[in-house]
Length: 255
Ligand SMILES: [Zn+2]
Image 1 (cartoon, rainbow, N blue to C red):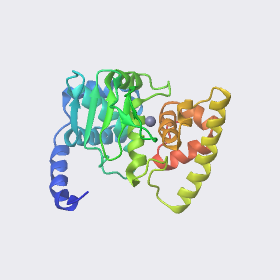
Image 2 (cartoon, rainbow, N blue to C red):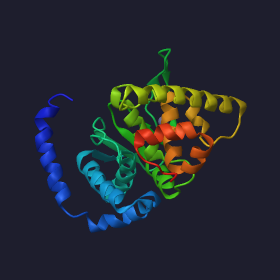
Image 3 (tube, helix red, strand yellow):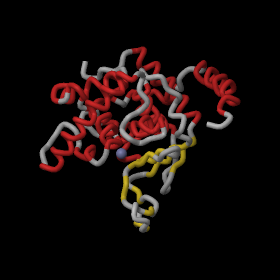
Image 4 (tube, protein in one colour):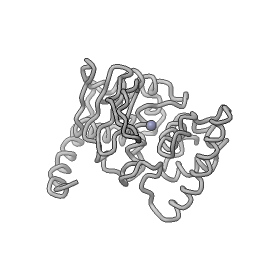
């Protein structure tokens, strides 16, 4: 980001001030109703509360389609986005300037397809734009948040795309810590992706939603949802995939 260095000290000072304040009492019920939050230890909960406050303060939150943005909406979304960041080095999704929230499924803007033909927008629940906003529908956000075991979590899905895009490419591989980790990642993910594609073609049910067979970027986003929401099943049936995600997120939700 241009001139990022110029604003960094001021931003860090603002963060220190923000986090020196106590966590707003009125926000407690919003985090307490999230099953993943209740399952974390004290250190994890502290960290989620800190990170979500920064996300709430620094991102532009915009209600769309008649939705009025409330603290509940911001906290519910930011808390789930913070779970992915819990144990990784991060800069608070630095390429996410704004988060747009619709009441429910919305129609995407018309787009030109690969052949240059304008296509009408489609009904959608969420999107993550490269160097652009995250778009979410509020009812799908709530649905994904309250059922921690259905394998679907819209916020985690879209913010996993944002982690993937940190290196400028939506290719299913976020920035990794070492060459060893990268080579293991490529080996395991390619194999698992192919397995899911085969399952999708044959109409076989799998732990992961076969939407992940769309492309490698969707594979990583769907695998992330599954990692946090069907951790034990994923570990049991896809141990190498589970291990890769565990190494990346430095979390072990199946434990
Ligand atoms: Zn996606």
